[in-house]
Image (tube, rainbow, N blue to C red; front, top):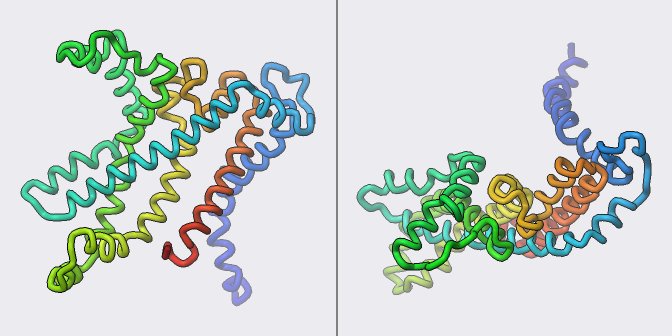
Length: 294
């Protein structure tokens, strides 16, 4: 009985490890093996080891440079826009005012909506032929000709980025507002007595108290946005001519449009390496191991 109790934690954890192996470790190992194989579902008789040929094909792909540039713009503009607007929203909602709870419910609503529904809604709103946005802009005299938000190669990516910013602002607002509401009001009252100005209160009290939350939310949101491909797939499917594709959506297209699992897995490993490098550099720059102290 004593021996059984000593192993009890392992029995309790076994189901979790089993699920982790099935849904994470096994797919990860399979992707690693596929990345070094010619693995096309359209050529099932030619499956076999091909060394680093998949990586060469990916890096020599004429679209890959544009996809990397799009990925950089996608992450920087999306996370930056969401953070700035979320921060402003959290500051505005921090002070009590009549109807604040109702207003909070309205502005936080997008976070509760499925990204699939958001993508379909904005694809309809911004459609050049029957979308209401173009119609209203022309009626108000703001534009003379229709804007092809989703079919113009110069606009498609930025249109999806704006949609993603709108969708993700509530995440930062919720997290930062929760952190701000934990700041003791006594600190602000003491700072006012000492003659501190608005900027001094913000920097030395508000920012100092919530910087741990800022570091953590920026790290998590960057990883999520970098891996998010659902809005792009629903709104533009990476087009036109790959102009709105990022690494995650491009990997998805390789796997399910061309059925080339070898190249898709090679992109996946490159994708994972980029994220690991980013996380390492971010944690070093923000001194994450010291709970976000700059």
